Image 1 (cartoon, rainbow, N blue to C red):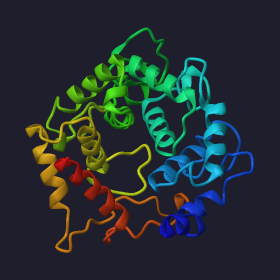
Image 2 (tube, rainbow, N blue to C red):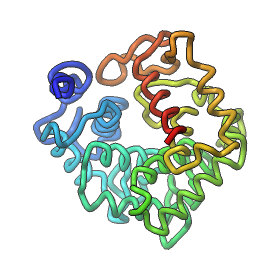
Image 3 (spheres, rainbow, N blue to C red):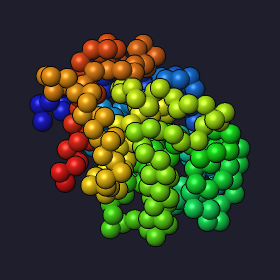
Image 4 (cartoon, helix red, strand yellow):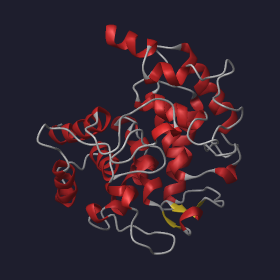
Length: 287
């Protein structure tokens, strides 16, 4: 209890919340995608990864409501600009998960979960420029399935307790699992816009984690939906363990430095945030 109280009085949670406006947004009003990485979208994602909660600070509840009031579209999706055409998987998965972790219980969240599942399996949704087809197809990735977006969506769907997942959600999760196991995950040879080699960021573990993702978050997503004992994940698990140093810690490989609120360590050095992410993920192997 003392540690929780302290988290809101100093450190990155306090640093993030002190920049929130009285209306509930960061930097400028509206759907909050820009500027990166200090506006409302990124501030809420950051707070969720720091362990903040509506139950502990009423400002967070106000911020969640403000965000949904401006980013929830008429299609029941979460959008960059508040319209159906601005729906993109990485943002939607990130925000649905962030709001859920923060303790938001707004009914619009469940509507978004439903739309997200339908968009993956192609069940009665209209596609636009970004989310342009089923199976995680994204206009920003040349209309090919986007693995970064798929990680965010699968992780978001995993946050719904198994006994509360609809048939649509279960089908969408299966689509995600099949997609990630279509190659050996450690290779990350998923479709890219220009058929280029996978981004090196896949192998760089960082904190916070925004729209860029890494093998650690991909593994967390697969473990969260029950694939911890799948042999197809073995090389990826081995890779995560190989990055642990002789003191049992992991380094910060990817950093937002001064681009977001707070200081999360120096790149290339042992890092408590990345170590926490790795240990949290590996612990799921035993559950």
